[in-house]
Amino acid sequence: MNAILRIAAWIIAVTLVTLPVVAVLNGWIGGSRWPMRHLAVTGEFHLVSDAQVRDAVLPAVHDGFFAVHLDQVRDAVKKLPWVRRVDVRKRWPDRLEVSVSEYRPLARWGEKQMLSENGELFPAPVTAMTSLPMFAGPPDRRSDLITLYSDAKPLFLGSGLHVTQVGLSARGSWNLRLSDGMEIEVGRNDPELRLQRFARLLPRLRSRDPRVLVRADLRYTNGFALTWQAAKPVPSTITPIATQANT
View 1 (spheres, rainbow, N blue to C red):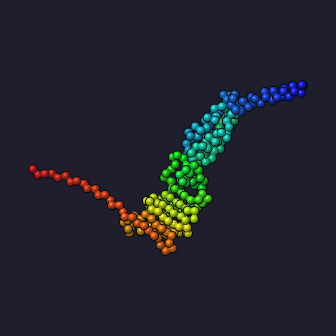
View 2 (spheres, rainbow, N blue to C red):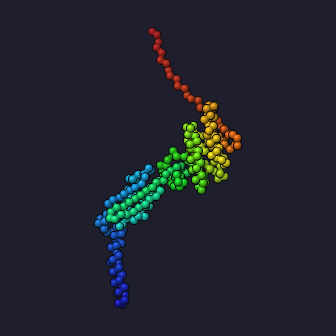
View 3 (spheres, rainbow, N blue to C red):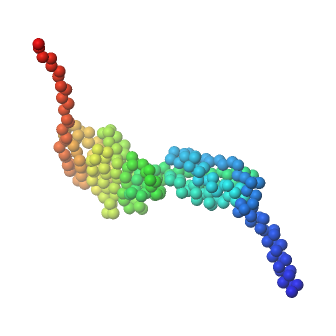
């Protein structure tokens, strides 16, 4: 019996010691005594705002310094669109520091993802940038898509065109679409060289033919196969001439 009483007394003593600690750590008590007064948000913000981060963090800091769970804060901020990485620290006695780094989007990847400049795929926000080019291809060839896009982009600027789509088939065949709607079938071999040759001749081709170039097949050793479309006639504007009757 004495042994049972000693064990019971020991359990009660431990409970009386640990319960206040648990209560403080969980914010049950002491939140007003050790409030979190300062929130420092740092990062190079382009797509995420400081206000968005603060709104995500505030629900987790109401119960005081000890009750702030860093994982909870990190998860809340990480759910914001465009957020790539979150670092969270507590500084005694009343400061929470949140550092945020963003994804730098380079292109859209399908309908639900985007591709960052570092080659990372991430969920596309609802307000995804439709002005970015569209990439399509095997996910493990992301770096190759980025490389070809970077090489092709400056080639057509002299013609006033932009690369809007880059595709790579499962068999390794490349294709592009330009901002005027032109489709370019590049093929598998030497895509950079073929694009350079075509882009160099494109201004001359367009200047010599009034039709619209809608497709170019570069999969030939010594030339291109071109598909033209009749240019739409420019509507003429007729200005009526006022006449005055002689009386």
